[in-house]
Length: 270
Image (cartoon, rainbow, N blue to C red; front, side):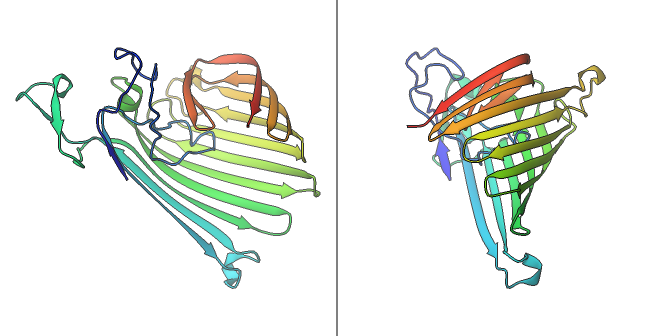
């Protein structure tokens, strides 16, 4: 749980959004790695927020016949963030002109809500499957500083499979669906990745905005990638179409324009 108020510390007091921040305030929400689940990532509201998160892990032992020969892992996570209760210093005035907030007070407006459950099961020595369901309530106006969009309510389904061909070769697939009637509408995604341990992988995926309310924008965003890793270094070369919007990599999110072309990514950890 966390409660914060007026935590915007910057090297220039007139800077806005993510510019010139001195302090780092991580969001108290799950950091999703699946592409569609990360379409609407939450960012801490420095002007004030109250948030809670809880996560439960449970292992169903193989002694249960329906848990499979290796057992089944279940993870349930819930997080919610909303406004704090701000009282204007001057009656009837905008709280932006001055307010007071009682410690640990909670307001009515919801900024973000996320419920997700993941079922991870090893089916046999070569095949593993993970099914994930997520419900998200994303306050687009508040989180992105916009007007007129309101809340985006979405249901997200993901089925990931991992098949080991040999001790060094494997195939991983993902089938994802984001279902919503708000913003850009519903999306679907198919992904396939072939890995040769310990260094190489080849991947291809297609994001399809099949539910966009504007028919001309129901586009496919296909991308192909080749990657090489050694130790803590990783190089990835790709080509494809990139959708406009918020893109998250390793928990760091930024707003990107639509693009079509080659990409080169070099990552090194030390």
